[in-house]
Every structure is written in structure tokens, then in C-alpha cells.
Image (cartoon, rainbow, N blue to C red; front, side, top):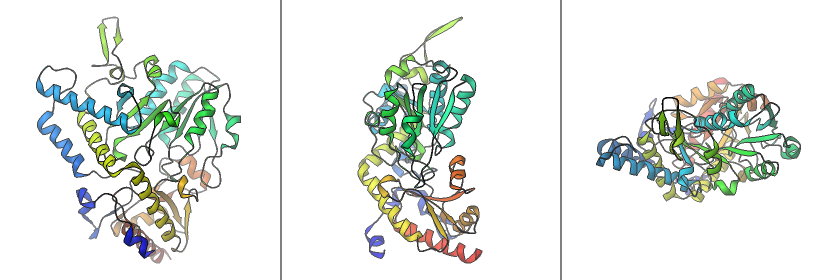
Length: 413
């Protein structure tokens, strides 16, 4: 694999990411927890600082120059997100704190009004808790019934029962674009076609899709698509929900407050037009500015190049991990059905112990259930280790991972 290691360099220069220059426990940092959160390039840090130094003001509410500039960059960022996911109308993009809030927005603003006892929601056993718990809460409050797509032995969704699970009672299907725990890329369009055939809506958890895959919400067949900025080089606390205009217009506001109203009387109010109806209060303007800068950075790298880079790293990692005694990997065997995530276990060693040993060597990976406890139970494990790649990673990071696993193997026998 030496030739691959020499050929495959980081897609983005590590020098663009100041945090990666530091040492951890006296070792250079190899950051491999990108499915949890990604590091920020100088371009993003500079954009946020520039906003606070030069343009900071509340948006939409001031006639003075700073407010005009703040509004301009805020709404420009909305258009940037819309373009990134193939949405034609920026007004269909609602700012949220992230994917979790976006999914909860749909559950509350659409679900509480639309669902009745006996209606069905179809999820999968592979969902992140953020695309599971909101629907559980909604089902309890409305009397709706949860149904589930099962997991096949190869780490993909078992779609053999799809036509049986989706029926005239199905009102909504919620599925991840990409599994955060296994990296499995789900066939969203196939699921969406089956859902739409019975009049059901499709909600896509795009937290792991938008950073890594080319996304076109219409081509996917999504009715709603949720994403998080911090998983794609942007700041924490900013994300977005895209929804079809006619659905958003029919939904009640998720929260009440300033900037989401048209008129307010003592006994009632009317709502502002999209997207303001769902954006009560002072927004995270700097977060939107930072996310737009992150998208511009990624766009310059190229969507296809990002995906190709991650899959080459994934192939390199799977080959390298196969040389470590006692390692069991999880997920589909076909690279084209995966994103840049590899989950694994070391026989006889708890994942937390593996991660601790790696940390002493400057290698950062995740250990735990990855907010996917039903999936872990299906796999028959309490937890896994997870290494996840992004644009600044290289085979050298994978080599450091494998060397650390060898050390863990020696320590724990």
C-alpha cells in the first residue's frame, strides 16, 4: 500500500486548518472523528471574525448600514446553502441550530397537526437518535404507530419488505441519507418513490449526506432535508431545514417571537412569509456566514473530488485494518455503498480502551454507540470504534491509526 500512501494526499491542505498543527500528548494530531464534527479552515474563521469586526448587527430590522450589510450576508448565506443542496428557492431553506432541531421542527410543526391515531411513520433501525426520538415523542402525542425497516446482514437496509411496510396508512417516512455509525449510503430515491406512491412524505436526515455526497433534494425525492454546519467545516449551532414550499406554507410556526410575525394583536397574530415564519428571535448570523464560507471552500474542492478522496481513504483503511489481529469491521463491503466511515471492534478489548490508547498517540477517533443504540443491538455489540475521514485526512493518518491499534493489541494481549 506504499504506492497508495505516496499518491493519495489530503484533498485540502492541512495548513488551512490551524487546529491540526498542534500536538496531543506529545504526538502530532491525527483527527479521525469527522462524523461527529469537522475542523474549520482559516477561510471560515476569517469570515466569522470579519462579520463580528465589521458587519455585526441584527438583521431585517434596521435601516442603518450595518444592519443592511448583516442582512445581505445572512440572506446570501441562505442562497449558498440552497445551491449546495440543489434547492431552487432560497426561501425554502429555514435556518436551525442543526439537523436535530430541523427534524424536531418537522415533527412538531407538521406532525402534531397532521397525524391521527393509527397513522403510521416508517423509520429504520439504523437511524441516529435525532431521527428516532422526535418521531417516538410525536407518536406518543398523536397515537401514530412506528414501523421500521430492518438491517440486512451486510449493513444496508433490507428493502425486501418495503412494499409491505409502506401502506395507505403511512403518512411519513424518515430516513438518513448516510448512516453516521456505518457510513452506509441509503437508496433514498427508491424509498421516496415507494412513499410517494401512497401519498406519504419523506424526511431525510442529511447530517452525513450534505458534507460528503452530491445532493439534489428534488432528485432524491425528499420533501424535507436537514443538515448541520459543523459536520461540513462550518460552525456549531447552525444548520438548515429545506422543505417544499407548499408544505412549509401550510405548517404552523415552530416557535413564536420576533421577526416571524406579520401583525400582532393582543388576542392573536398573523405570520410572516417564508422563511421568516420559522425563524423566531435573533438568528445566528455569524453561524450562517461561517457555513456559507465553508460551503464555498468545499465547492472549490469539488463534490465529486470529495467523495472520491474519501472512498480512496476508506479502501486504504479497510485494507490496513485487515492486517491488525482481532479487528472486525462493520458496514457494506461495496465501497460505492459507503461514505468515509469505518466502524470496527478489537476482539477482547473494549472500544473505550482502544480509543484511550489511541489518544495517547495523538489519534482522535470515536468510541461508543454513536447515538445509534438500536443499530448496536442489531450488531450484537455495546459499542464500536469509529474512524471517519474528511478532506484534510491522508493515508498517513490511517497509518497512525493502525500503529496505535497495534499498540492497543500489545497492551491488552
